[in-house]
Length: 195
Image (tube, rainbow, N blue to C red):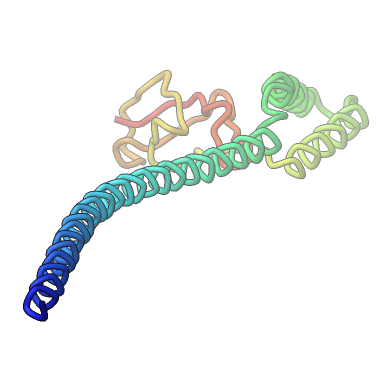
């Protein structure tokens, strides 16, 4: 009887051991499955993180380009605004220049007529000087041309002549004065040039 009891205990203990081993195997498989799932989740998370990093870099790059474009736009607008202030009066100055030409012609004609027109000449000269001062104050300057080398950016040659007194390609006579507005040529000088 003692043998039977011992056999039974042994049998029960073997069954318990088998059950524990089965449970242990099941837990091991579950842990292994969970570990593989976690690995997959980590890999997926890493891929997603890489994708987000790339997307962030792309947005950063876009932002930098837009920022640079905006800075260039601001600079361009400031320059245009500055040019508008600087050269806004160009049209009116161009319209006034023929009046100055006529004043100069009137002065030259009066000088040739003698003393009877001296007071008239003085008045015209005063008006002319005042006109020139106002234009100079607003950035209009006469282009100096006589005895200067011909420059197609400043001069408009309408005649050429052989001249032994001057070097070649020099301005010998001005038919109509040229002017600049804030260093921009608004009317070139009409000149005669030596060959």
